[in-house]
Length: 124
Image (cartoon, rainbow, N blue to C red; front, side):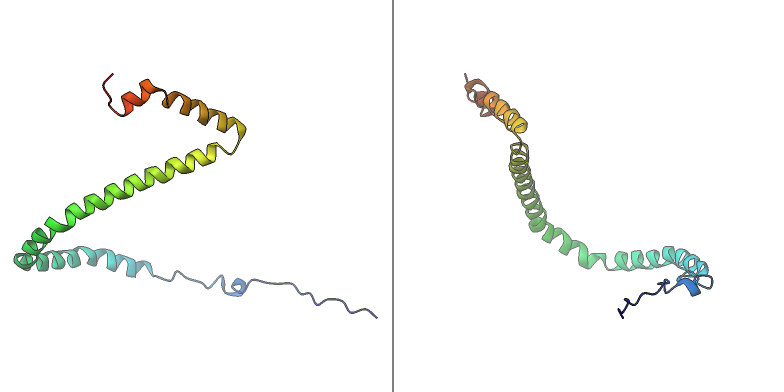
């Protein structure tokens, strides 16, 4: 005789407990945390105020280094993003014959000497 595969009805594990389930965080606890946040922020603000003679000069002098560094990093990231986006868009649009024709038409317009002179600020 042939053996039949074992099958059983699968019931979700939480089904018997669904009625007695309750939220993990009680609403009263959420209310207490919401009421405590302003007081905690005031204490942190007071600590920042009384310790500011120490950290404000340090922050000022180090800002002479990290602000220009952040500007340079941001410009490099922007140029990199634009270059990658340009290459990706050209590759994407040249996948189909219609897109390839569109890209070559735009390139033909841009590569004319008059447009190149305008782009490169070459006096005519």
